[in-house]
Image (cartoon, rainbow, N blue to C red; front, side, top):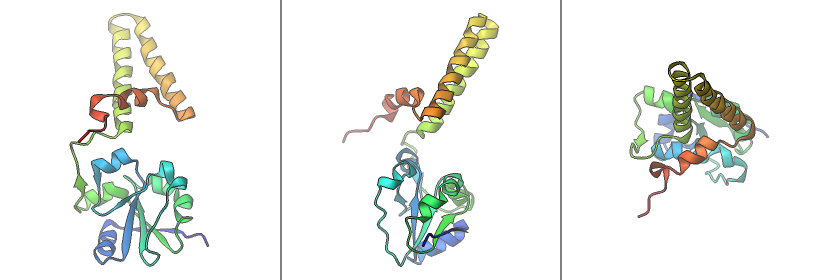
Length: 177
C-alpha cells in the first residue's frame, strides 16, 4: 500500500514531536542540515534516498520536511513509498517553522549551502561580465555568456563546475579535530 503525504502545520508537527508520537525526517542535503534543522530531526538527503535505510518506529508518525516544502512536494511518491502507514509533510518546510517562531538548532559557523554559494558566484560573474562589457570592452559580455552556458550544462548534466571549485574553498573543507 502506498501512503499519501498529509500536510501538517508547524505547530501540529511540534505538538506531535513533543508528545513523542512523531519523527521528523529532513530530506535536505547535509550542508543545509548542518547549518540549521529542527532539534531531533533525522537527516536523510533526497539525493541518496534510494540507497538510504530509513529506520523509524512503525508506530511513530513520519513527517518529512525540507526548506520550503517544494522538494517534499516534488518527491512525495518516493517519500511515501518508504513508509508503511500514513506519512506527513511539514507544510511550508523549515521556512514556515521559523516563521511560526519555533526553535531551530543553528550553526552559523557552518558554511552557507553550496547551492546558494553557486548562485551568488554565478550572479556576480554575470554582473561583472555585463558591467565590464559596457565599461571596458564588449568582449567581456562573453563572460556572462560563458557562465550562462555553464549553468545550462550544469542543469542538464547534474555536474556543476562552479560547485566543484567552491567545494575546494577553505570555508567548505571539513574541519579536522
